[in-house]
Amino acid sequence: MAHDHAHDHAHSHELNLTHVSRALVIGISLNLAFVVVEAAAGFHQGSLALMSDAGHNLFDVASLALALVAFRLQKVPPSDQYTYGLRKTTILVALANAVVLLVGVGGIGIEAVMRLFHPRPLQGGVLAVVAGAGIVINGVTAILFLRDKDRDLNLKGAYLHMVADALVSLGVVAAGILIMVTGAYWLDPVISFVIMAVIVVSTWSLLKDSLRLSLDGVPREVDMKALREAAMKVPGLLDIHHIHVWAMSTTENAMTAHLVVSPGMAIAETEDIKEKLRGALASEHINHFTFEVESQDHSCCTETVCDHSASASGYLHHGHAHP
Image (tube, rainbow, N blue to C red):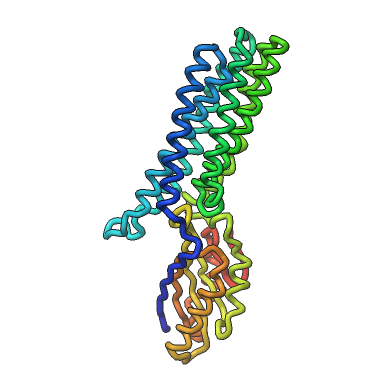
């Protein structure tokens, strides 16, 4: 049996870490300053909507700070102990951020229920002005992550949270105006419930994606069926099996596979097949490839063996996916 391994790294979709770090630092600074102002205004006015939104924004600041640390750790080179470096910290940070945000929702909910039955007098104008500033701050921060939001899970989460926060602030502005006009103080805790709903909706997808990647599941952007179909179009490749795909970080995906070629094929020919295969899979969101070449007469994977061994997520054999 002929075995050979090929490694390749695709960098066409790499993030500019300097740009990302700068965007995160600016976002942290803007939002931290706003948290201080919003929390002070909320405490002075006794507004749960402002204080809960300030708490939410503080979680966002912590999320951005953790993302910044993760991106810095991503630059740590591989070692004998961590052969992939510390890339996976970006995934762990995304999972931690999602969990922390959802836990924070519980605290807001308890206070909102109590305040709904015992509303406090508020100055609606102050709510509207402070929340209006929040629209600007969150909008500017969202723009910072707009360019890279589809390249990284943490940046996508940051972008979605900033957009959601801007919408929440818009709701608080509306509530402030209505309180100022009607004196309906019960709108303050109601807006808190809206904030809770926005946090849950915007965070749920982040939680699912980060949990999937933490368990080495196939990244959402990778279509295993399309990946195999693209591979089988490569001339000279008879079959591809033992396909495994997982995320090394929130920006890099890896793939291993066994390639079946004709008996007696020259090394130069197999190298050509691997090169064409990497080109064919360039659009399938894979950054790191490891291929093992097998002769058709000595394939390590028979129908019987594969049927009994198929258990991993993202595993394909002869076109069949085994969940």
